Length: 489
Image (cartoon, rainbow, N blue to C red):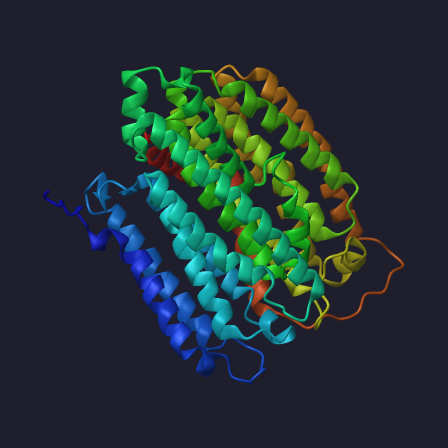
C-alpha cells in the first residue's frame, strides 16, 4: 500500500510558526524573563511577545498580497485565504492590545510575566489556526491549542480563590463541550465519510444527508460545541463567572479572541455544510439568537459588577451575530466580519479603561468605583462614553454602522422578525450602558487616586479613535470585509 504524504507549505503557516518558536523560547528562558523584579514598566517577555506578534502581522499581510487567492496545505486541512487572513489579523491585534494593557498590571498584581505572555502566544496560535481550519480534525486540534492556555490564564492568580474557581468551572465545562464536539465530528464522519468540510459538502450535494438522523445529530453536536465557545444561550452559563474570576487583561483577551476564533470556524461550517441543508437548522438557530439577545440584555440590567455586566453584554452581541449567520449570504458574512472588528476594538478599549483605574491588587470592577471619574478624568470618561455608545449602536460610532450593516443583511434575506427583536433588544441595552456612563458623573462621592497606567491609557485612546473612525468612514473596512467574505463562496 502506497503512503501518500500530504502537501505541506510551511510558508503559509509562517505567522503561526513564528509565534510558536518565540513561545517555546520564552518557555525555556522564562526564569530569566520572570525573575523577582517587580519594577513597573514593560519587561523582556512583553516586548518580545509584541515583536513576535508584529512580525506575524506583517507576514500575514504579505501572504494576502502574494497574488494567490487561496493556499491549501496539510492535505486540505488548512486554507490560507482572505477570510482566514482577516481573522488572523483580528486575533493578532487582540493579543497585542491585551499584552500592552498587561504591562503595568502584572506588576501591580504580582504576576510572573514569562509564563503569562507565552500562554497568550500559544492561545493566539490556536485562534489563528481556527480561522484557517477546513477540516473537523484541524478545528478540534486548534480548539485545544486555543483553550488549554486560556484555562490556565483564567486561574493564573493562584492566590485568588475566585480565579481558581473560575478556571476550574471553565475547564470542566470546556472539556464537556469539546467531548460533545468530537462526538459530533465522529457522527458526521460516519454519515458523510469524511471530516473535510468541502468533502462533507460534496456528500451533501450527492445525496440528501440532512434526512439522515446520524448526520443531523452529529451536526447538532458540532453546533453545540461552537455555541459554547461563543457564549450563546443555553451554553452561556460559564461566561459571567469566568469573566468575573479572571484578571482583567485575560477577560479582555477572552472576550474578543475566543469569540472571533470560534466564530471563524463556525462560519466555515455554516457556509460549507449547513447552508446546503436548507432550512433544517434555521428554526433552532433562530430560537438560540432570540434567547441569547433577550437573556443577555435582561440579565445585564441587574448587574452592578462591571465584569458580569459586560459578560452578559457580550452574550447579547452574540445573538445579533447569529442572526447574520442564519442568513449565511455573502453580505451577511461580510457584516459579521465588519461587526467583529468593531466589537474587538470597543471591548479592548473598555477593559483597558477598567485596568487604567485599577489600584494595586484592587481591580476596578464595580459600577460604584466609577463614581466621580468623569470629573477627575474627563478625557478618559469621554473615551468610555464612545465605547458604551458603540456597544449600544448609537451614531456616529462604529457600533452603529456595524449593527446597521448586520441588520440590513438579515432583512435582505427575509429575517425581518429577528431584526425587529434585535432592534428592541438593542434598545433595552441602552439603559445599562447609560447606567455605567451616568455613574462616571455621580457627584458627592470621593474617589481614591489610582496608580497611573500609561499603557492602558494608550490603548483607550487608540481604541476610541478607531471606534469613531469606523462610524464616520467605514467604507474601506466594509469593502475589505466583503472581499474576505467572498473567498468562502
